[in-house]
Image 1 (cartoon, rainbow over the protein chains, first blue to last red):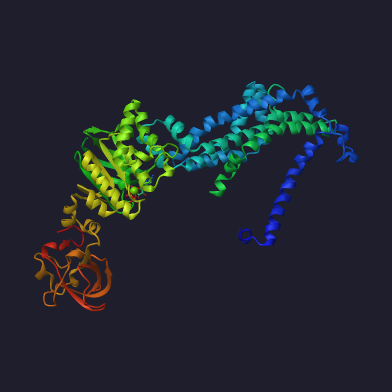
Image 2: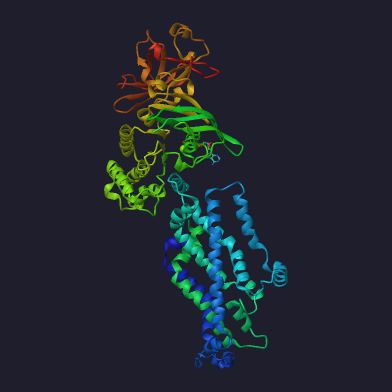
Amino acid sequence: MAVVAQSSTFSRIFWPTVAWLTAMIFFFPIFWMVFTSFKTDADAVKPEYLFFFTPTFENYLNMTENYDYWRFAINSVITSTFATAFALVVGVPCAYSMAFNPTPATKNILMWMLSTKMLPAAAVLYPMTFLTKNFLGIYDTHFLVIVVLMLINLPIVIWMLFTYFKEIPKEIIEAGKMDGVNTWGEIKDILIPLAWGGVASTALLCFIFCWNEAYWTVRLTTTEAATLSKLIEGNRAPEGLFFGRLSAVSTAAVGPIVVLGWFCQRQLVQGLTFGAVK
Amino acid sequence: MANLNIRDAKKAYGNTEVIHGINLDIEDGEFVVFVGPSGCGKSTLLRMIAGLEDITSGNISIGNEVVNTIAPSKRGVAMVFQTYALYPHMNVFKNMAFGLRQAKMPEDEIEKRVNAAAEVLQITDYLNRTPRALSGGQRQRVAIGRAIVREPKVFLFDEPLSNLDAALRVQTRLEIARLHQSLGTTMIYVTHDQVEAMTLADKIVVLRSGIIEQVGSPVDLYENPGNMFVAGFIGSPKMNFFSSKAFTRSIATIIEGAAHGDIIGIRPEHLRVTTKENAMLSARLELLENLGENVLAHFVSQDDTALIAKLDRLPTEKIGDTMHFTANTNLIHLFDNKTKIRK
Ligand SMILES: Nc1ncnc2c1ncn2[C@@H]1O[C@H](COP(=O)(O)OP(=O)(O)OP(=O)(O)O)[C@@H](O)[C@H]1O
Ligand SMILES: [Mg+2]
């Protein structure tokens, strides 16, 4: 990082410019999506209306009236919330025991959990669909979506919590043992208050991942438990190019999570860079 | 209050045994110090007593009750950690009260005990602060306070002073000694600082690689070390060890019954400067360290062994000169060359 430290005129101008440009490139599609969502489907594909058009809320009004936006949104909220909650309920004790009572196998278990993320989801698509639809009969239920979302995020949740818990000196937990606190008390009175920031950012990240998950939510639901991902997918109409409508649906789908992320920025950045800057 | 007995206690991590069968009896009210080089198992043994490590085999009993499987908090022991291990998210009062609250003690009794301990340790003014807002010395007091309020039968200290600066270490050492006097509770204290060991202990336990080398009072260990390891470990600077070749006279004329191959040990403070005629040891002066109250003189003997003598004042001899020494024969220790055991 010597280049930054010198802070010559060149680097003072060059690096911020690069940063801004990169940010713009990443932001542009989102901007374009929001922009397009205020055009009618007809206008959206006409080059003469590329920048100058009469803004309309038609797409948004249509969405709530015709496509039942709120049902999808509520499904998203329910599944993401419960999946996150269950992931924490399982993940916290799991990470706790691995951080403070490690066995020779702990490292391997952690690696194994991570390795499950390397399996292409498509590889288990058929068994998953078959089993849930024909065998268990839980296809297109909230239960299924919650379980699936929880399971696919559990490795990351445990890894993050493990990293945070590892930061807590072992002696503090031992002092708790000397003071006579039981395992649940250790978690509730010592571990969670100490790792609160970490637990919160883990929860937040897990929630965001759940919300954004598309592969399984699209394939394992039809109507009952369909989330916003499914709504977007459903508007990617095969017959053609309803860009205005699609943009509005997409905007409305990512909106809540962007707002949430905005308010929790600090937590999130801390959570994402924790291991890296330590 | 209670006595503590350790019988054939062993500890293994997987297949590696680190404590190889310890037998130790500690009387009620005794101040016992575990010393030994790094990695010898002091902390492990202490943690076995605390209940933080389970005992692979053997027994540990407190007040004649075997505690092997009893939870740490139920053993009537309290521990002060080297890193203090205070709860960072609780203020000083809550830190000290935490254990009592776990024991469901009535709130007014908790308050009474915490305030009394805070008074003794002079931390009353900080009761509302979090540990972060305290200095190292204050944190150490809180850690001690947290142990006191539980009114344990045995206090366990694991190198409690090693994170403090030199001046504070001396002061806190005195306070711990005073605390022991006023409470009269059994205390077990781990350190590798032998000044702490000598000044605090009623009984010193010297450990090496998971076994006890010797148990005794500080004076006892100083005067009658059982073997070369203890002799070298207790006392500063270290005892001088050399072979009989270093002597200017035949060893038989110096010490009765000494064999030729024996290792000879004389403490630096027991070497006295003398004339050439009376000398049993002559050595070339290499280096002088003036400590103010005394001088450490480094020598090389005629057979090239490095020696240290503690002198009262700077010698008139210059570096490179030869000096002559003698010592009281009852202050000369003989060790068997093979077994390293004192003869
Ligand atoms: N959890 C563990 N797993 C494996 N070996 C361990 C473990 N804890 C300690 N040991 C080993 O046990 C031996 C004794 O360690 P211990 O911490 O008791 O030494 P110590 O005398 O307290 O040393 P120090 O003065 O450095 O604190 C060491 O060789 C150490 O490597
Ligand atoms: Mg230790």
